[in-house]
Length: 310
Ligand SMILES: Nc1ncnc2c1ncn2[C@@H]1O[C@H](COP(=O)(O)OP(=O)(O)OP(=O)(O)O)[C@@H](O)[C@H]1O
Image (cartoon, rainbow, N blue to C red; front, side):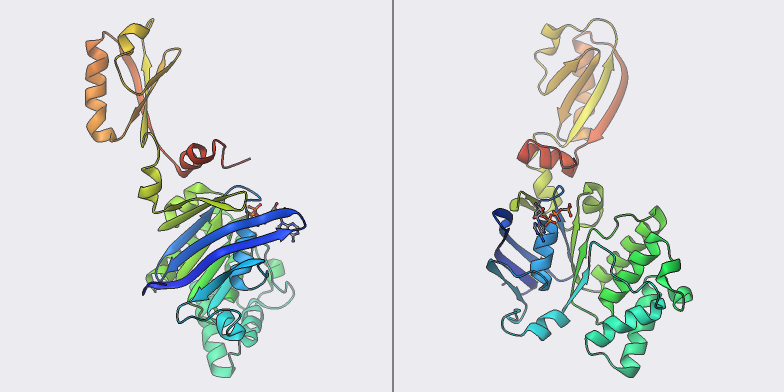
């Protein structure tokens, strides 16, 4: 474990009957960092999160927090340092929001003054102070999610695990959740964020771990993962008339579909001019031009040959 790592998981494995949900997952999490755990449905993300927070017992592998603390060495101490926002919202619908948060705090041993102070703080943080006395039964999906995040934060954990926290959330709450996560990150918390929405991972994650069929298929910074693609960007060029394939043959990275050319480039600012000049030289008349940036979806496709979403 290096100095700034707060959590290291090694060789996690979990089977349900003869189905291997997680085969060999290792990851390391640093303070002030969001680790995006990305993969299609059934890839093993929730099972991995379950093993990290101690809800699911691994068949093999270890998870260690800074200072060498593990579930085996000090279960209560370990759990106090971790907060979980589960995939399925877990709230007492008929108890006021404040009481929901306080119950979680009490579970972690917070008492009286501290419990009240932290409850107020986290409700304010997720923007629910003015609804503190209302029951979650009267909340929107996004508000329930935010309350669930408050519950996971009340004991001030250093590591926060969020399992698809934007599922069923309206855009306004989604942005509020992202703002909260960015604040937590700035405060030095370490976050693991599972999602199958690559645009969320692109926005939030400093480090990505891509899983498929229970295995890590790639991990690294976004720049490192994008560098594994054959091209960072594609130029879509609409051309006039009958294209001459012989004339196009000398251009690298070009695919033609009817009157559309897809041209792979690595640097759109640098490469667009020369590409257009090369087309003009070959007598190709350009009628339209658009570009598309590679996404994590392309990374997944390149690594596995399959789409990330079903
Ligand atoms: N309690 C369980 N009993 C049996 N099989 C399970 C159980 N939990 C998960 N699985 C199986 O393990 C595999 C991994 O599931 P997991 O929920 O970890 O995936 P996921 O990546 O979180 O998927 P999603 O994005 O759909 O939530 C799946 O094949 C799933 O059916």
